[in-house]
Each structure stands twice: as C-alpha cells, then as structure tokens.
Image (cartoon, rainbow, N blue to C red; front, side, top):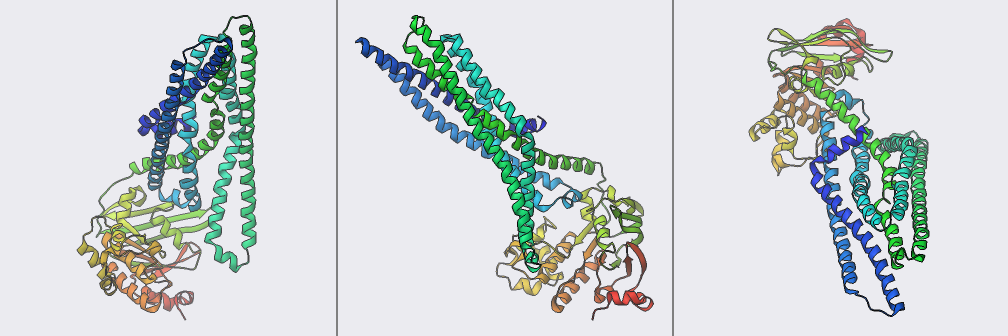
Length: 580
C-alpha cells in the first residue's frame, strides 16, 4: 500500500489530465450502457407496436440513440488521447525521477550495484510502471464513478434486478481481483526478480562474448540464460493463465447475472407488473453494466507486478534520500587547493575475512609527488577507493591539513571532496559529445581560452590544430574517434581545468606505445607542477620523478623512499619495477 501511495504522489503533477481522462472514460461507459439499454427498449417497442398494429413516436428514442452513439464515439476518442497523453506524462515523470535518484546515489551504492541491474531498473521496471494509470488506476476510478450511477438508474426500475447486478459487479470487481492479487503476489516478486536476473545474464553474456568464445564456454553460459528464460516464461504463463481464467469467470458471471435477471423479470411481465418491452431493456442494461468493472480483474493481475517494480525503484530512491541526509550532515568547506596535505594513519580494510589493508600509514605533503607500487592484490586499488570515497572507511583516519587545521576527509561533502581530490583512472570514459562538452564536465564555466590552454598543456595542441571543427569536434561513443593516448591526455586536460588539490593517477601510462607514453608523461608533468599527486604505477620513468614511493605487499607498507634508494636496497623491488 505504501508503494501504491507513492505512485499516486508521482501522478500528482499531472492529476488534471488524469482526472479528465477518468471523466471521459466514465462518460464512455455510461453512454455505452445507456445506448445498449435504450436500443433494447426501442427494438422491443417497435416490435410490440408492429404486432399490435399501433403507431409510436420513434423520433425521440432514435434521436437519443444517435446522440448516445455520437457521445460514445467522441468521448472514446478523446479519452484515448487524454489518457495516453497522461500515461506518457507519468512515464516521463518516472524516468526523470529515476535518473534524478541515480544521480544522488553515493559512490558506494553505485559501486555495489550491478550495472545490468541498474539498466534493468531504468528500462524494465520503468516500463512496467507505464501500466499504472492506464491499466490499473483508470479502471478503478471509472468503476468508483460509474457503478453508483448505474445502480441508481437500475434500482429505479427494479430493486431486485439492481441487487442481482450489484452482486455480479462485486464478484467481478472486488472478490475476483482480491483473490487474484493474493494468489499472484508471490509470483510477481519472482517474475520481477527473474526478469532482472535474465537481463543481467544476457548483458554479461554479450559483454564477455569474446572471453566465452576463447574458453569455449558459450554453450554453458547460454544454457544458464536458457534456464533463467524458462523459469521466467513459467512465471509469465502463470500470470497469463490467471488472466485467461479470469476472463472466462467474468464472462460466466455476466451471463449468469443476465440469466437470473431474466428469470426475475419474466414473472413480473407475466403478471403485468412490468411492461414486456422492459424485459429486453433491463436484460441488456444488466449486460452492459458490467463494462464498468470488466477491466478490474486485469488491473489487479497487473498490480502486483507494478508494485514490485515500484518497490525496486523506490528502494533506490530511499538509498539516495539516505545519502542526501548523510551528505547534508557533512562539512562544506573551502579547502586550500595549494596547501592541503593528505595524512593516512592506521588504515585497515577487509572484504569479509580477507584483509586488503593492514595498518597503512603515510603522508602526501602539499605539492608532493608520491607513487604507490605493489603486486596485484597488494591493496593499491582499495586504497584509491578509500581516498575517493568509493568505499567507506572501516578503521583508521584520512585527514587533510587545511592551513594547519586537520579536516577528516570523510566528513566533507561529496562536492567538496570532488574539488579536493580528483582521480584519473586507467579506463577514462569519453562521452558521446563534442570536445568542449567533455572538457566542461570538469569545469562547466570554462572559457574557450581556458580549454585551449588546457589542451596545450596536455600535449594535444598538434592534434587540436588539425581538427576542422575545433572544440565542436564530436568524439564519438566511448571516444571511438580518438586514440587511447589522446583519450588519456583529454582526461589530463580535464584535470588541469578542474585544478584539484590532490590528483590520483591509476596506471596512467599502462597500455600505451612509447610515443603516446612520452606525450602523456609530458602532459602529466604539467599537472604535477600545479598539484599534489598520488599515482599507482610501476613505470620506472614515472617512479624517477616521484618525491616518495610507498611499497605495498599484502596490504602492508613494506618500505618507502626514493626510487633509486629502493632499487639499491631491495632486490624484490628491482624485479617489481624493472621492465625487460
């Protein structure tokens, strides 16, 4: 019920369009009921008049029938336009809400979520919610409005027939949906879960298709996808079977209600308590009245799936809200970008029972260049994740000196932290936009002159001068129009524009040819002259430029010092950093 109310709140901005659609849908149902009832009375009256050889005024009922037919057609057309437009407006509202939620999630929540699962929530769960108004809320509102009006008119003719009709309406509109909702509630959770798992597995399969082919594991992975698909299809079959059974039961109830109504009316006609022509009118009146609730069973079949999809999306929203609360409680300070020193003291971190960092302590002074070296699994990536806030700090402290006053790094707001520490990852994402748009992600208000200066310092001037469109050059999806070395230097240009107090570099020269490597190193030297630098690298050329080197093994600091001193004192360090 909570998720249902939260969905109603999402509808609030577009309530006028939704209420108008409800009004038009109600008019359509009432016009159809009236049309069928009056048509039955008119045909029976004409037949009776013909048999009796008397004349009757057929202009008025014929005009009424034509009027109701026009109203039904016009209101149905208008209702389709309005309700579908309201559905699209609601869908837009939900999509914006979900994107806004994702943008507010902290790094930990994003890192702990599978990207395929987030995509599934963005697409599948959001698409499931587009049924909320049109297939669920609208039938409920139409039933609430039209049933009392229909019962009022029917009881004016015969209370017994109205009671019979009302009983059938309650069975179709209340009892049957309630039973279906209770039955399908567990299945809907499993269906949503299997849908998410299937999409995640398919995404992983497509992403890792090369590796699957290399290791001849495609059939195994495809079998796994087939099993999930079969389980998902079984859940769909259960829902569709329930839908088919519901349609059959609804039709049976409608026919029984009409039959019982006829049985009730016939004795009244026989005793002349009711006119014979009213038998046809009331019979068709009963038949048409069920149109007001025939969509309710289907609505309650869809409702559990919609609520489960909503629950997954609202879970993200609650996480974002908690992150915002925590973020609002953190400090927003202006850290001195030229005089901030980073001090790590007694840092411990572990994944389950496995220790990643064990009592790590060192200092990165202002304008100092420090490198971290170590074999795979030594804790380098974990350390970077702690510095950038990607992982929460478990034990120890990371502080910044701000003109002599220590500031806990994890007490800073996300915006302040981003201004203080910037990370240049080995895999840097280039957005499908222009060169200027990519640069302005780092500095939204950067001028043309500032962007060109940053590109020049990043050793991109020759490449930039050859671009016909200049800063308006599109870089392509994932930066496909630039080389790997150019992509790294664009990232360096972004770092120059942002001018953080501390820059973290993750294997900045890894995977580059010698020419690209030299260009990237020259560009990094420009950055290093302006900020404090902490870099993960095993490149001897970079290590020689460092003021201090932290050597990690098994999460512990083995040694630290200058590159040349470590080379002369530790044979293992030589094998770790020497490239043949």
